[in-house]
Amino acid sequence: MSKKNELIVATYDLLKTDNIDNLTIRSIATACDCTSTVIYKHFDDLDHLIRFASVRFLENYIIDIQKIINENSDALDMLVTMWEMFAKYAFQNVEVFEGLFWGKYKEHLGDTIFEYYQLFPDEWKNLDGLFTTVFFNNDLQERNHIMVHRAAVTGYFSLDESRMLSDMECSLFHGLLMEYRDKYRMPGKAEEGAAYFLKALHSLHDHYRIK
View (cartoon, rainbow, N blue to C red):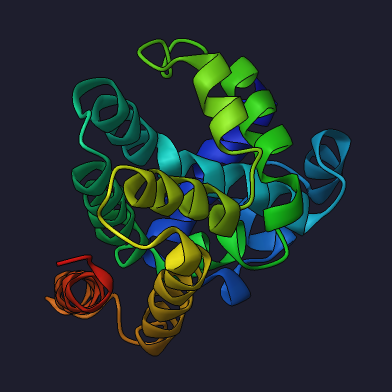
């Protein structure tokens, strides 16, 4: 493993048990038994390193997403299942997912995933690199609107209301995710948050679904 890869993995391990705000260049250097100078040789700053380490949390989520897209043809089922998978992993790692999809790492997410894929080809050998980089180059809200619009085209929702419904789904999810920011590491809270969101999502769909 190269030193750059080692630094990413070590930062990922720290993020699993500690909050992003608590990480420092010094703490990561200590974990890797190296100096801060070594870290700055491979990364521009702390945020640059955390961004790459955060992508490591997406691996199982991306695998699940590919399976959903490959195996599911019903537009509404795919929409709900994609949210279900996103909720499962996001509520387990609230800070990381918030930073990647809404926060300061959002702008570079697609490029970071592409470079990460090159750094860890063996670990991501079961992933479709083209699918992964293209899928995550679009804004989450726009991706969701594509899925909602597809469900509307097939008759589940009104086309005129598809944009509003999509925006409401994203706002609902982000708002609820932030409510769990300070408690998601507590036993059972991640599962509770994901379940509550899915219940609310089904209620929203019931309201807007064409009878």
